[in-house]
Length: 118
Image (cartoon, rainbow, N blue to C red; front, side, top):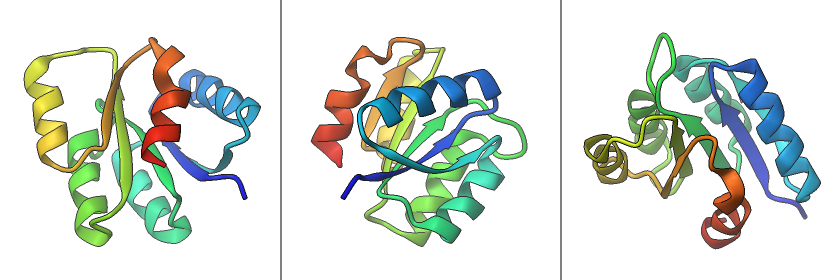
């Protein structure tokens, strides 16, 4: 049975690109979110196997959403991604329970990372 994925990114283009890539690799994208608040709500609603979440989003950023998801479900698998690879941000995401961190648009490692964490 394919792993289920929630994609959270404020860019519709990025969500579509990720969704196409994941579906080609036989992942089931069960929901999408355009901000951190929506990501938390959709996580609670769908309980996906994996979350791929942008760091910079409106309403609630990726770190805030990560904290809420991990508080709700401590074993949640959340992969953070951002266009800004600032070391402090990566450390903060990992300290708050992110499983992995990917720098956009460098997604050639995404599928191997999903296979490793999922």
